[in-house]
Image (cartoon, rainbow, N blue to C red; front, top):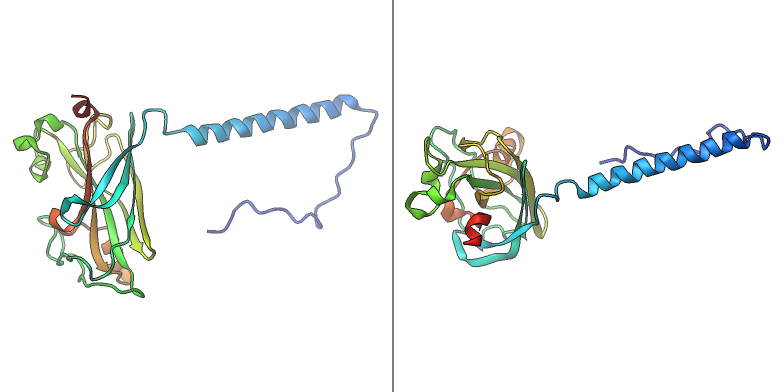
Length: 245
């Protein structure tokens, strides 16, 4: 992306007229105005740098191997920030090597969804697509059978679970980085909206979509759900209330 803040061509700029030495009041006014603008700019940078980190610290979690949370793909590979107005998630893992893991099929989609485009392994010169999903359970203590899972996304489920797509990327490097946000009250793909970001139990999953396709199929890859927990790389973050028990 090009830099919108380009430097002016000083050779074509009009010559600045010096302030007459006989008008010290005007010089002082210019200096004070410049100083005030500098303070405003620096204050603005301070807001940008600190915004979003006031509500809590980042939590970290290991990301398990495909379908196996007991073995780690990336130690501390997932980070979660809880805020009063939502969640931020940041994930970094080694990019899964094409052909080294199990792939879903195009019919492994939620009920009523369109089939996913054809899925096949990529190669070193044909990168693959991955998406990041977040599962939020507003009332984890009420999850069915004492464990939060897909049953808790059903309409009227006591745990009020919801599913969100957070990101979608082409894995064209050695490291796969996925990140995004979920806002308080944001409509989920399915289930209940997030209404307790500071107390919800959070699960995340990376889903594989096979070799990147072109055109509309490529867009659908980046914006579709496919597979199931046995085919995802996953991590979880317990509720702070549960962690304190």
